[in-house]
Structure formats: C-alpha cells, structure tokens
Length: 360
Ligand code: AMP
Picture 1 (tube, rainbow, N blue to C red):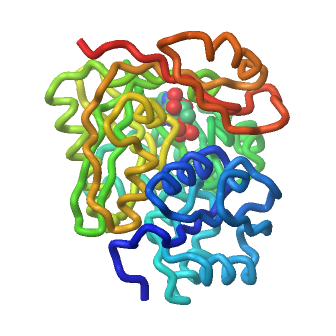
Picture 2 (cartoon, protein in one colour):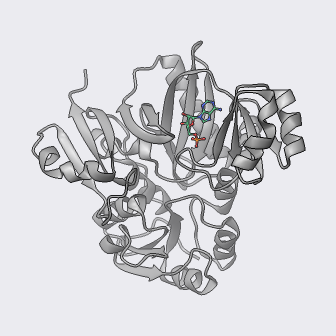
C-alpha cells in the first residue's frame, strides 16, 4: 500500500502520452518525481520528456501490470482508458487517482448526466437512445432542435449530429453508425464557461477562476480568463464543482464545462476527469497551474494557491499554425507551449499560446 504524501523521488504512472501527459510530466519533474508513461506510440509527446515509457495498448494486461509495479500512484491524461482495466489496477493494490468511478461516469454521457442530476447539478434535458425507435420516442419527448451524441468515445465535437426536424430520426441514427447514444435538448446558451477544480486526498477543494471558452467546429479555439462573471455565477459554478468532486470522492484536477444561460443559470455540459484544455491558461496566469495542482493532489501534497496573476487569452495552435513559432516567440506578451508533435495535420493540436495582460 502506498502511503501519502509521496516523497520526491517517487514514481508517477500516467496512462496516455499526449500533450496533457507531457505537461503533467514536466510539472511532476519540477517537484522531483519521476514519471512513467504508458502509450501505444513510441516516443509520444509525453514519453519523450519522461523518465520511462511503456509502449503498449491501454488494455494490455501485462503492460498495465508493469506500469502498476513501477508506479507509486497512477493517473491518466484522457478519459477513454478502459475503466475495467483501471479497476483491475486498483484490485492489484495500485493507487489510482482519480478512481475508476470518476472514469466510468465521465465515459458514458447518459451515466454522466444521470449522476449530475442526482447530485443537484443541472444539465439539459436528455434521453438515452439505443435504437431508431427509441430515438423517435426521445424526439417526441425532447423536441427539436436537439443534439444526438454517442454515449461513449466522443471528443472535440466528434460523434454528434444535430436534428432539426422530427422526421430526421433515421438519418441521424445512421449518421452515428447506430451506436448507443443520448439525445440532448439544445442549450440556449449565451456563453460557454468552465471551471477547473481540484480535490486533495484530505478532501480539500480549490477552484480556479472561471474561463470563457470559444469553440470552432466542436474544437476549443480560444479561452479567456479570468472570465468576467457575476459573483452569483462564480459561486454557483464553484458549488457545482464541489458537489461533483465530493460526489465522486475525487482526487485530482477536473474540468467542468458549463453553459451560461441568458438568465444567469448554469447547466453542466460535461466533465473531464483530468487536466483540461480550458485550464492551460493557468500555466502562465496563476500561482500554481493545473498540472502541478493535479500532481500535488494525487501525491497527497497540499493543494497550491489558485489565485490569478494575469489576464490570459489562450489560443490553441492547430495544424500549421504552430509553424508561426518564430513570430510568436518574438512577442513579449506571449508564452509559447509546443507539444513536440512531428506532423502538423490540419486541426491537430500542436501547441498553444498564453497571451498575458495585467489584471485590472
Ligand atoms: P461536447 O463534446 O459535448 O463538449 O460538445 C462540443 C460542443 O458542442 C460544446 O462545447 C458546445 O459548443 C456544443 N454543444 C454540445 N452540447 C450542446 C447542447 N446540448 N446544446 C447546444 N450546444 C451544444
């Protein structure tokens, strides 16, 4: 059994070797930890900056066992790691944070919304859909316009289909490949906000200032933080985050995506049981950023302060936009973060910049 707090020199295992794993690994190294990355790709963005790599599938029992044996605590950087495999790691006696329940809830949109409503976190109206007939029934209940989403494996707007007319059930069901889905009422939001929050092993909770997020084609393009919000909105967002963290007995950083309605009410869109793209601004805008905060939480260290130091505009660098590094590096207000990915495919997240202005 691992005992906490973990001393420097301990090893942190991370499932997933993308940019989130890379930035977690860099933060962990700063606190004196070693990181071992498990990812199917050799020399993944995270693997290249970590002490060790295990190159195998996420569901390879032998690979997971090796990861478990090497790590004092295991975490993940993306939520589509098979939850039953993570549960196996727990059964083997590995410390895993956040735990398998958080992962299972976040992996299935129907379970996620059911959990959120049960703890008093409001969402849009929704109905689970598992056949064309049940989609017809769900449309009669929810109405149009509405959004059909796959229950699992959706990210960056993938696996989603808008329905404008009640007679579109067949086409919509086929468009998602007949996979289990949920139908969501359209949220009539004025803004998309998010709150990045953390919970430590002792139950302490810390929230970052809210950020305002702008998507294009389902992909995050730009975050502005701290968002200008009323005290009521901020308090409500923090109360929602606290309910989620406590309800899941969560340890680590979570991203909670919110819709702000015209009357100031907030609905939860979805939760991400990990560090989150809308929290990248904290790297240059807050006293302790989301990556270090996650490492502190899972290692059983005290959480760090989340106060803002600057106003930040975070822009994702997609595809060839990262080729602008020379120009961006020359801008005094710009902090450049590149993920070390080789091929700048269109739309691929290659890096981001944080543009700083004084708080005021
Ligand atoms: P998601 O993958 O669920 O985060 O959805 C990606 C984006 O689609 C969100 O950031 C919103 O811009 C939009 N979206 C998702 N669900 C809804 C909804 N129920 N109503 C309106 N827009 C939505």
